[in-house]
Length: 321
Image (cartoon, rainbow, N blue to C red; front, side, top):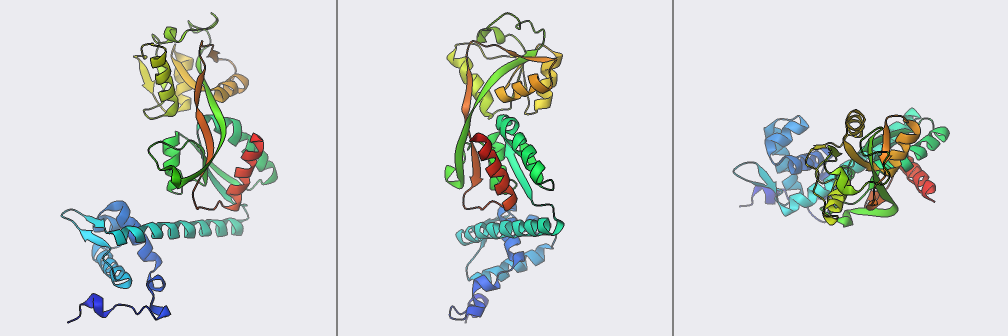
């Protein structure tokens, strides 16, 4: 006797009954939810449907593709190789549909498009902001969203399609084949202190003289922090013992301005502070250069930039030239 699955198999000769024609957007969302949540109940909650309805949807998909998509475990489910392949394709389909909706909405509203950019601090100040200011003169309705964060955070946001492109570095823990990148600059850093700091006004300062003060550094994994720690080790200088770790530039500036704390920031940020926010903070002249790895313009491989994103991308490239 034939099973229900065998009885409902689609004929490969009938173009109207091919799996690609039968799968629906709801199926795509379910596969992505299963991949993210690892359980049918959690996936159902994500899609705001009941668990029985989710189970029926899974059974329907398995009938359509004529293959098992999930494996029931004692706790939750795991996608089979077929399920993982379908989830990967489903995610791409949903991303493209979302981008299509966004472009249509932009055209309908007359805003001229929206751009989501991620950047590490130095190029955000030195490249992104001037490029955005320039574009705003020509395209006043252009909507620009900028996230300034560490490269490892931005790269994952890019892969999750929350950014159109980023100005950062590809983290070592991620597969570089997932990205397309173009090196555009080398970041240099410096130390900043409050005006009147015990170490300021005495000429060049040796790195060892800074270890006894409070420091403000980025959290673990941040490239600038690793660069500084390696510099201390190479110079055979003890690492600072009193350290506040934060990714907030504002909190960093507040701590430096209100105490004898020392912080490392990009040269571009220090220049901006001295030029635009003159008064309370100055650069500490150090006896060694602090050079961080080069940063790049990075896009997700095989993902096309929207017209608005391409406009900002080209404007940043033009500033580099």
